[in-house]
Length: 301
Image (cartoon, rainbow, N blue to C red):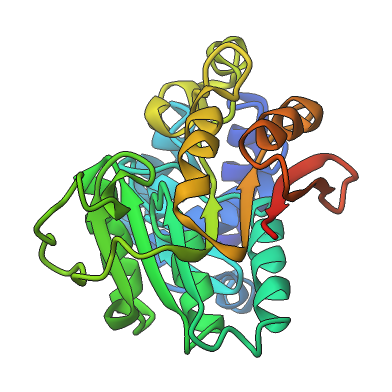
């Protein structure tokens, strides 16, 4: 089997047996991964024959994909905001929609002299997508990253090291904003500065917001492979967001901003929750490029 035949075979298998809507792209990624090359080089070597071992490796990758394992987990990587990130089942796979939240934080920072002295907390850091992207684009900002999962924190740290921003991100295990409270951590954890209890200028969060019913009806790629802890936000999808909003007023500086990713149809409910926590704040729901509710934003006076 040569590369051209492998591409046709894989695309046919993934589309007919796997029901993939992106079979051509996925098979290119899987074959390039098996050959330790990139997609461009595949098309420069279409007549090159695969040895037995490489063909077996490629077929094993196809079988994993047919079992509904997400392509990103098979490859062990995913691009986000121009950065290649390591991904594992320890954290959800970063989505393009979350780049909208990063853009809003960067816009806010631009109005603050390019983020000079900005203190940002990335709540529920997961694989580190938001925190690492912000650290890359805001070299003078201090980033704190919190997560309940030590495995997710270790993954985020590896991604920060990969992109050479680890020295400006403090990774701390804990629930939502609890690690920022003196009462939660009277002694700082390794890697966290003693002034981590100070207020922050920006709270950024991509928390679980999928409604429980939607999660249980989700494709097996999501339901069986991505961590439920990172996706299921309760019956209305807002249970964990509501908890964060209750904690946020005591941790946000005057003139600070909060940005939380939300899902389709959650804008009004999220806005009401934010107004209850921040009655004097400027609260709005911002949409993504598809016109869907995507980010809850609040700016304190």
